Length: 569
Image (cartoon, rainbow, N blue to C red):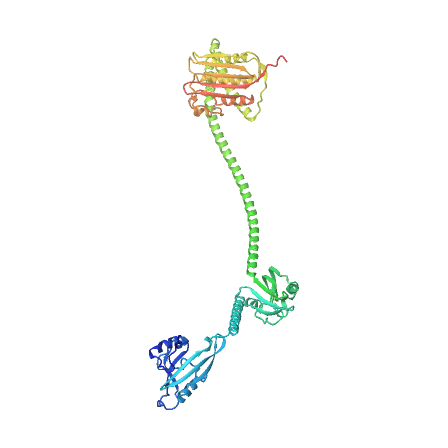
């Protein structure tokens, strides 16, 4: 049979001193070792101590007050309520009587009612004190649940209050106008700075909206508020014109707002008020209106400017056209004047040269006739008369050319087509120029057969002019070829010589009036022959072409459309 062995030391056993520090380390009670401190001038041990210095704090005590107390200092700096709560008197009583004592120190931990349990006992010159925090003591399940519920409720209230304060701060700082109205009469419960500033900081809270803002009575805003409270439907407005008395002087000024009237509700869903949120957009609206006005002014200015530019551009164009026309007229007049001057110069030069020769012949022959007065000198007189007649005929030809040129320029000549034999006309023309041939010159002719219908007079003059020029500008023993071909109702006349030829530079001016090639000035001529030929061809709807090289002769090609012989009709 086993005998039970007790694990506890005997009641009269002495506690090992070396275990005391370990015991204090694991103890949850705060242990203090205090020393009495007397007032200055009072002998130690005489009378009641003024305070107790802290000589030792256990680990639990250091944790409780979060810092170690320097040995020898008074305890009141750490426990300022010792005197008020009777703790210091409790210390004095236990130290004076030497009897152990207990004291309850009320406290509130985490907003719950609690207390400290103090136990004190004098040990010689020391006072040993034990602090026990009842908040750390085990509690019943009901008490613990109640404390936790109270803690959650307090935390929720604190969170709600923080959120409410934050919301009020945001509303107050919001850059919009905010007001909360309560009840069907719209009593103002809350406003922010923006809303108060809009109404000149007049008294608002606690008053009905109608009483606080009478200037809105005729602006139909209260009707919208009533409708929102009655129906619960929101009302929104954009850039609405509102007249407000911001100076509280009775002077209404225009403002523009974007705003919403939003119904507020109880937890049951019943409407209990209206929330007003508005944004002042006056500066934006006025700026846009100003921009629109400026754009309209700019548009009108542009229209006027465009009209002025168009008018001035038109006037400028008309002026430029007039100047251009006048410039062309002046240029044409200048060209005409230059041409006229050149024509005059050519005419004077040509006339002085061409008229001098026949007139000299006439004068010389007339003088010589006077030298033959005898009857037997009649043959000599007749010879000189023939010279005079030839000279006069030459003068008549010159005048005829001048007159023909003038009539052509004035449009007084027209073509008169008739039926004739081109071969006969060619033979007559060649016979007419036989007296112009130089020594050894030969004219080779090739004519077409059959009658054609043209102005034979004009064709004879054209042929006569081309043949006489070919003989005039060809040397002795030269051959002049005349070819006339008639087919496809066109007559093609080619006059080819072996004369001095015409330069390319002179060919460009060959059919101009009074023009003479540079290498032909030594030969007699008026410079009108080819001009008249070209004009005749215009009357007959024909044209002339030439091919020439200096020293290699010249070929003129005339082409004229004709009608077949109508004599049988």
